[in-house]
Length: 191
Image 1 (spheres, rainbow, N blue to C red):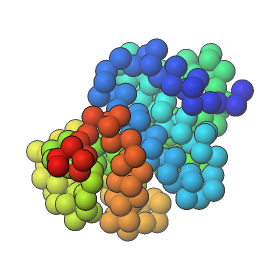
Image 2 (cartoon, rainbow, N blue to C red):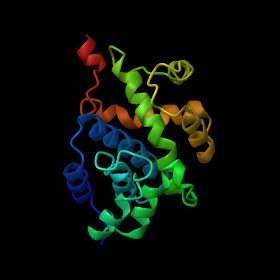
Image 3 (cartoon, rainbow, N blue to C red):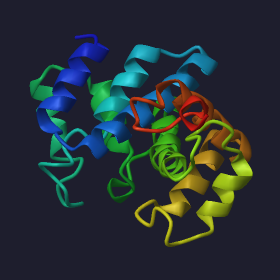
Image 4 (cartoon, rainbow, N blue to C red):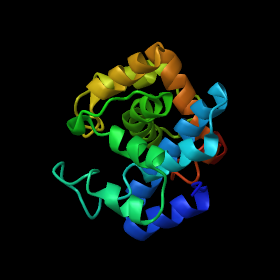
């Protein structure tokens, strides 16, 4: 079965009720799709992997279950193995090889998308005008968005072969069009 966004969204929302987790899925999807477009990759597949990467987090909130126990659920729903492997590969504790550009991109976008979202939440203009230097300054503050693994943010940019500034710029640009869906203010709101 070829995955579609509609099917992935339906699966996600069946298992995930938290608005914060749904927004995180949307942010990661936007970032991963952005990279798929830049690289001429399969945007629909990449977007579905990103949407579903944490679909089971509410039912499996511990590392001994998430995301590995979500794999069988996705198989039962008929998702292709490429999607399932992509979802599983984002988890550091599983130590699965990130041997495709899709797996590398999901890992690189996961933590950074969450962090950029947090940065947007504390700015009167959200993501509008958010510069990499501001994001990097916040990364150095351990108490800000404390749940974000900084080492994974840095490792993700390196995995993609990008300077951190460029990766941050890409993620900000990817998320800006869906700022309202992410609960973020925009320049128009601040005026």
